[in-house]
Image (cartoon, rainbow, N blue to C red; front, side):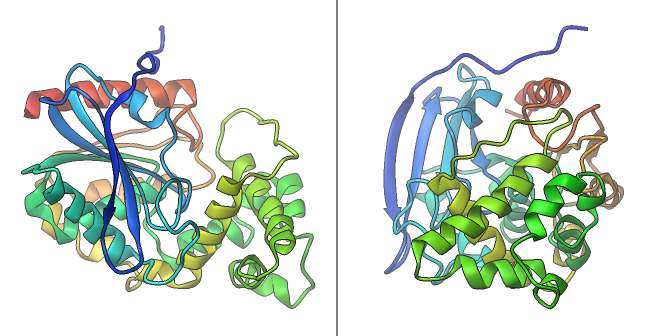
Length: 313
């Protein structure tokens, strides 16, 4: 079988910042068909921003594609600002941008942390959501965070986990997220770089089915994602334990396609299964892939998913 691949590169037709409060200006772009079916791409991390490839999972001839850099990351301003940076405000920002762009309802497309935010947004603004495409479910529970950072994923990538835990003494290793957060929020940029490098090296190692070459260079995006992830996870994603599953009744009839890698070590497949079981109108697909959307089997299924949703419009 020949796998479907990303759509060719295309330019945005609109871009800008929306001032959402006294501190934050959230960056967004529009691309694809200006008169097409609206879809918002919700990026992962938290903290990675939307790269140029994000929109290429969607057909630009059919969809009006909106990409948003969440608070404090990507091209949103101020960069790395943590004040008033929480899940509730990220969802409010999405709603403000929807209203700003005069969109009635949109398809919500999220991956990894983007599934967490997409689900939180849909549960709080179900009237704004026509459907959900979710890749790599992360429910934001304590057990999900501990699996990834306290040794679960490390059992599959022991060499990467050794680097991840190497900066810390025995006491600090009792809670890696808390320890990383302490150093990543230092005023010293070199300290941020040091801890951001070991954090992102582990993150980048566990997401793909095939081994990845990890760059020796540390980018602002790497540091941003490390800081934002720790900020959100040390605060329990800013919602009550098991919030997503406990509130899923609000979205149980919204058309949903869940695509989750069968061999996803970053976010365990059981989370996708638990979500699917609570929804009345969902389809669950387990491609032979890891966590990343760029594993060939995952890309293939995501392209098929956006094709299937065209019939909603």
